[in-house]
Amino acid sequence: MPKIKDTVKEKYAEALEKSKEKKDTACCSEGSPVEHIRPVAGLFSGELIAPSFGCIYDLPGRADIKSGEIIVDFGSGSGYDLIRAAKLTGPNGKAIGIDMTPEMIDQSKANIDKMGLKNVEIKLGEIENVPLEDNIADVVISNCVINLSPDKQAVFSEAFRILKSGGRLVDADKIAAKEHPESLKENSDAWCGCISGALTKEGYLEVIRNAGFENIEFEIEDKSSFKWEGEEIILYNGIIRAIKK
Ligand SMILES: C[S@@+](CC[C@H](N)C(=O)[O-])C[C@H]1O[C@@H](n2cnc3c(N)ncnc32)[C@H](O)[C@@H]1O
View 1: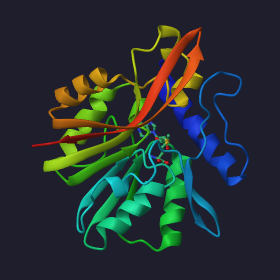
View 2: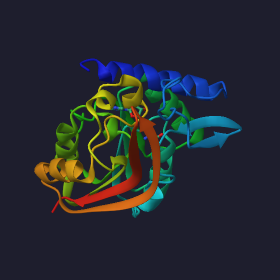
View 3: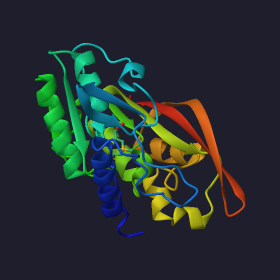
View 4: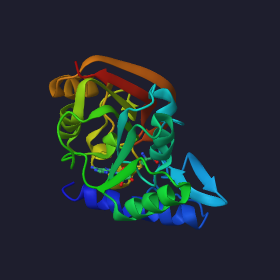
């Protein structure tokens, strides 16, 4: 799937637009037995301004963010977690969001302005090649994004590079119970629906360890399943935590 990132961008721009129209946001998986891309929560300011397409509700609240910390959000979308992270770190800290979809970047900028937050920066970019310097972050958070990347080794290595020594990775993600069948891995609808690109626990451990992280822990939250060509596919929502020593 050489163009999968372009497809992911199109589908998330579409999902954002549909969430504004308050339509059902099933956008890339209609007619196939895979999950729809739909917001799991949202930030309202009169209207829905920041739909959350994450796997875990209130990830910043689960990341033990302290006042003054620098937080980088990989795949910050329309800014739901970014805004919460900025509030938790407060005026002495900063939250930096990175997303590759221009429509998400525009929406998150508008949302930050609306909320009057001054300690937020938003960058258009890819998490495989993060537009930030080495050793600048206390925490890298990411909510249901890394499963969408076709090069997870690059993503975890970039997280490691930008974290300060002692910094932590807090990744909410989809975790596959076992290796997916090839036909599911190659289905672009299921990829955009955060299914096909999910690794097994062993798969994540390998790339996260290779990136240099230690103290890797998995916190499994819940489970979903569906049938694919007669086979039961089980996916977990979980938080993966790791430390850069
Ligand atoms: C499932 S949504 C999650 C968004 C946000 N974290 C949230 O909780 O609402 C995935 C987001 O990740 C972005 N994304 C996916 N792959 C990316 C990549 N390789 N680099 C940067 N952003 C990416 C998409 O543009 C989209 O905004």
